[in-house]
Image 1 (cartoon, rainbow, N blue to C red):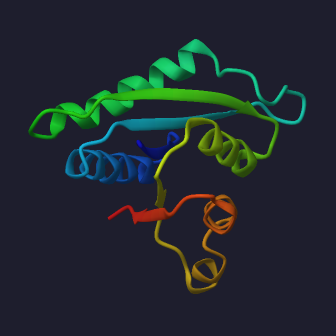
Image 2 (tube, rainbow, N blue to C red; image 1 turned 180 degrees about the vertical axis):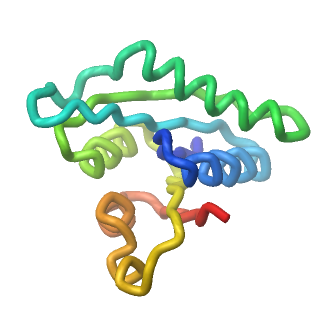
Length: 138
């Protein structure tokens, strides 16, 4: 089964993509890039993300792949929209696409921030139906 990576426009997403690509290569599996487009409270959750958003994610992932040596694993982007509940949308994508592992990016935090880890990351780690690898952006 494939490995999944949650992707967003933050720098820690790059570290997560790199780790997920390494995992997919090592375990000879494919990669599913999960993208949740935040639409705000007025948006409709559960719809596919805008094509421009998906293309931007594809380009960002391809840029990481282009910088790494070796043959890339098979990969694809799956997307959805969320009306202010990104963790639930990510968890739904996980169950829909039947993956073995989820890779999340995280950033350095203050002492208090370390306790709380980050709302999205903490909720996904606690509620994920699959193991989660949290990767720190260095």
